Amino acid sequence: MPSSQLVRLRSGGNLAAGLAHDLNDTLTAIVGHVGGRRDVPGPESLAKHLNAIEGAAERDRGPSRTLVTFS
Image 1: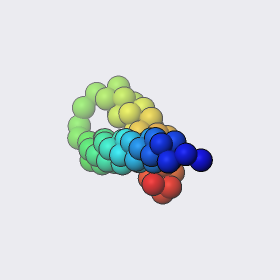
Image 2: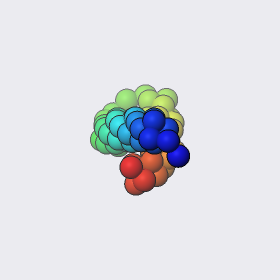
Image 3: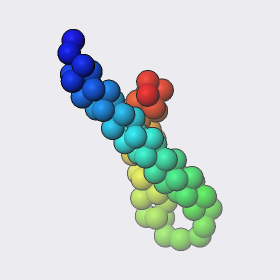
Image 4: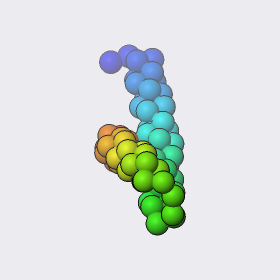
């Protein structure tokens, strides 16, 4: 494989790794903040929304952790 192709592949891998790390950091912050708000008194619909946010963030953490592992 020519060196120019290797450079492009390596660059793409570095970009994917950086994005995975950033996404994982953001999702970790979201999950942490949502979890801490469940005990705050408020309307019942707030708890439903927080559960939906946390569920979505947790689902997206799996793929980003996989990318981080391979980076």
